[in-house]
Amino acid sequence: MSNQISCNRTCLRYDLCTIDGSTVLDPTTSTFFTMDPTSPIHVEKIRPYPRKYEDYIMGQIKELNLVSGPSSPQCTIRHEVPAIVFSAGGYTGNLFHAFNDGLIPLFITACSFYPDRDFIIVVSEFHDWWQSKYAEILKVLSKHPIVALEKDNATHCFPSATLGLIAHGFMTIDPTLIPTSKTLMHFRDLLEKAYTQNPILPSPPLDPKPERRPRLVLTCRGNDVSSRRILNQDEVVQVMKEIGFEVIVFQPNRYTSLSEAYAMLNSSHVMVGVHGAALTHALFLRPRSVFMQVVPIGTEWAADAFYGRIAKGLNVNYLEYKIRVEESSLMEKYGKDNVLLKDPSAVQKKGWPTEIMDIYLKQQNVKLDLVRFRKSLKSAYLMAKKFMHKER
Image 1: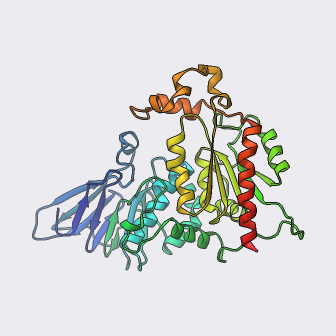
Image 2: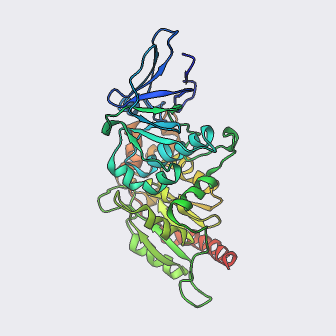
Image 3: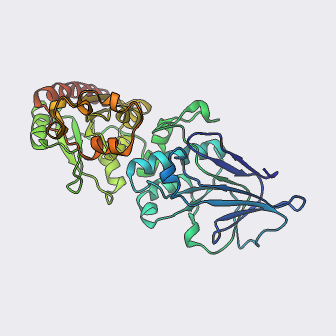
């Protein structure tokens, strides 16, 4: 390590390099230079994406260079605030990963290094669609234009820089690991600021009658997706209405406006959906609202680790509807006595290899037992009515 460049490579999920002092970025070579006339040239490299434990995807992340030596390029554009540098490559096209591997770690990193200071976002593997999709959030995090390495030829000078993002785990912010003790609720506050100019308010009355119905958003997978769909969705919607919900069927895709999704979920009382990336929208639910996750066979650990943690972190009432073998389309293909269905945990003891993951995630649909599911919906209804009562 040089006097100015320091890299921490001890963490499971990420590497982190910091430059404590003036640095010049040459985007054409993806290199940050620091001047140290008394020492020989020293080089560090980093892939600034927080999935270090996953060799396949990390092999696709561009490597950035940090060079300390007696010379560096001349500065073309001088900035007065530090830089946070990360990759928008990898799995970022998936909504879950965009938050889990990008926006939440960016929030953690900013709160850890620059809690009371502005910074500039420097992005490797930048995409126009990414900036457009998450523009409101990015503008709240930093008021400065983003520096995109692949689209810039000018050299940039920063007073210091942090390369890489800190991640605490799936959809998790650990306040004990941040000097300012931030939590997922603080990230929810940031979303509120990004998507509305007003503080969190009770949802507007659906009608002037006091017996208004709680609003339920059924998040479902699109027609272009062949797995983890509710095969009897029309019947499920009918049961929801019979119980007393106003039902909105939400079928997001890559073009769905997050601002519109936020407005819808922030004014709703219940969200229901089958395990999948669309459940990332649970981040938009208000505290004390209700979130029910339909858990297909073999996805129990992921359901809790990915989306159960959102509910816990946001103080949302959380329900899991774990389907039975008879409700899984895998029964027709493998038979109800197959170990894949009878004991998924035994199959997964040795890990989560692609061939097993694909069976549970890419081959499975659900046909819900309407009698059994109705009972879970009634529980959600009671929670929603209690939530509505507290809104008044």
